[in-house]
Length: 315
Ligand code: PMP
Image 1: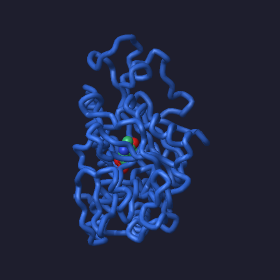
Image 2: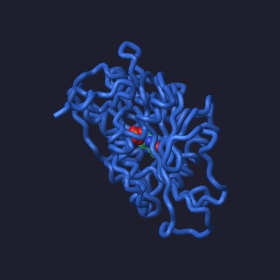
Image 3: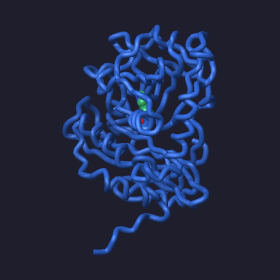
Image 4: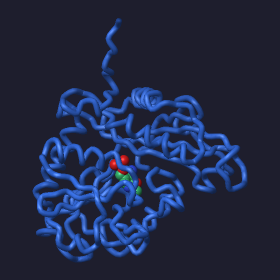
């Protein structure tokens, strides 16, 4: 990590980052028994404010993922937001950043299981810019790996062990010279990108796989669906996407907290549309950046300000 955080939330309190360490016998390290999140904070220079994007939604998903792993932490999403804002203030974060919450089976022990183990919450944040080099035009391949199936490993949650799947997909794609890969589910339909959800545009309609297609239930996906409908008047259809639709669609993009809204302009050496970012993707991207940076009052409820918290009215 370039530039380590100064602090972390670890075992119930904020501590110097160098003190937030676990034993090599930690259960989650061996068996992938953790659930994590990935959030962004966006700095608005005019308002001198850091906005966390949709933290309640991210923490609700995190707690859902932890439930799938039989974890019993008693935090509410709102309490997790409080911990995060305190951490970011302690860190004095005044730039774009990435936030990583992690709930993990912390007992130092041997034995594959989910029950009779302690759980712990950890959180840290670090300065962060673009995750992808080429957000404006990705050349992707179709991975020879298949997306994890929900009957084997929970696909709709962010489970640490499941990310071996994404890691295989992304490293093989990069080794073959591509920027990223799309991955098919066991049905043979396009599920998503290595670590982002996926949309195509055909005849003015935006199409994305349904949440029952072994995709991660992305917060950005949900955001994009709403923005397309409410702000850009675009019809959005959630249905399976066939592989050959990529060859004839007009536009395609991947979206996620890390990827933001990234245009997919080539697939396996074939151009998507004209081989450059399409007009709808471009408008959506601009809109997305306005929303996350706090320039669209209509969506202010998605943002939690860190440094100048909104005061609750006194009754
Ligand atoms: N799919 C996968 C596999 C991911 O890792 C991510 C990133 N969290 C996404 C989709 C997008 O999810 P979100 O928009 O909530 O970041």
